[in-house]
Amino acid sequence: MPSRPATLSPRDLARMTDISAVQSFHTEADVRDVAGVALAEGFIAVHALPHFTALLAQLLPADSGVLVGGPIGFPSGGSLTETKLAEARGLVRDGATEVDMMMNIARLKSGDDAYVARELAEVIAAVAPVPVKVIIEVSRLTEGEIRRAARLVAQAGAAFVKTGTGWTGLPTTLRHVELIREAAGPDIGIKASGGIRDLDTVARMVAAGVTRFGINTQVARDLVAECRALPGGVLAIPG
Image 1: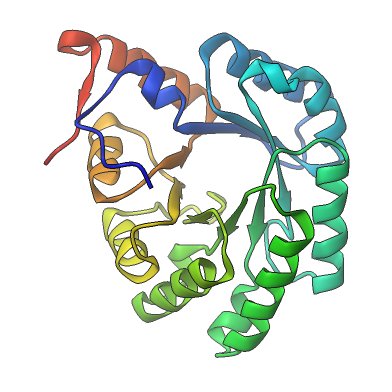
Image 2 (image 1 turned 180 degrees about the horizontal axis):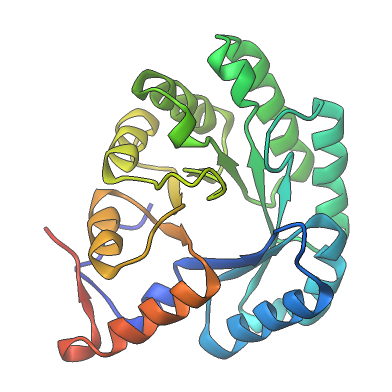
């Protein structure tokens, strides 16, 4: 992974941030709106539910600089592996350029690491070379389980460990990020998602190894604007 930056400009922050419309009530208009925000403000990716992937790909062509994302096994992770494979292939067929896969958390917590590893490997292989971020829902795991999950994701060849869905009501913490980086090693991306609301948290997480954020669209816009208003127009990253 690239070395930790010393500062982030507003553009840098936008290019580290995914925005989304993945709630069940998000409409076509919502998906069009979030795509428009990403194009106007330079966010790195937009994620929508699978049935909107083809629309999102139309709104965000390859030359737009904005990635098209979608979820697999979302939000519980409890789908059959066959279902996850079908979702993964469907997303790529419809134009996804990255995918976020929900780990089977129940199997992990049951100690069935072989099941988890096999499922990760199958989905990652099915969509290669499209990058896969694996969601491990840190707020539902012990520290030991976070370490195991992070190692499994790294060993499977995923592009990122993603901390959570953002749906539990519990935030991703700096400790969660530190555990993931320690267990997964230096070469895999970390996407922090859930409860990230201020630039101080962003800076500390980048220092700890976060390379991508998933942030509520309005909050993401506010943080970029706040970054622009800082002295010198950059966010300092603690050394």
